[in-house]
Every structure is written in structure tokens, then in C-alpha cells.
Length: 80
Image (spheres, rainbow, N blue to C red):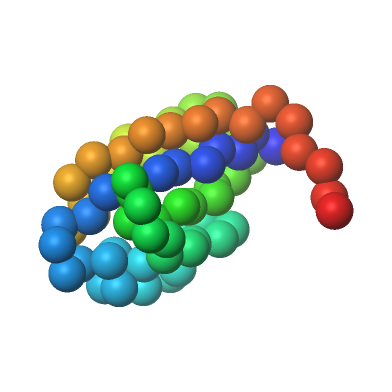
């Protein structure tokens, strides 16, 4: 199943509302509010690469309050 980690920069003061909206979005597995260069780290998955692309481009990146994103497509993951 295709998956990605998206690093999100939000408008100042919008971190909580963007995180709440992302938590309600289908395909979002995890949302973490973080400190540093980015405001949120989001893990996404979809049935297909096309579905993952649509989730990132048409849903996540269009949310009000998101300033920029960096997408890391996952090639492999191990459970700890």
C-alpha cells in the first residue's frame, strides 16, 4: 500500500485547527504537532499511487492554514 510522510508548515497559530482537520481526513494515519522547521508531521496511505497523489494534492495541500509541504514517499517500513 503506497504511503507518505508529509512535513507541513502552517500559518502562524493554525497548527491545531489544521491538525484537527487532517485527523478527520480519510487516508491520514497519524498527525503529530512538532517543534522545529515544520509544524506537523503527517503519515498518509492510499490503495494506489494515484490515490495517494490525489490525497496529497487535492485534499491535504488545499486545506486553509497550510503554507507549504514537503512529501517523502515511503519505500519501506518496519514495525518496532
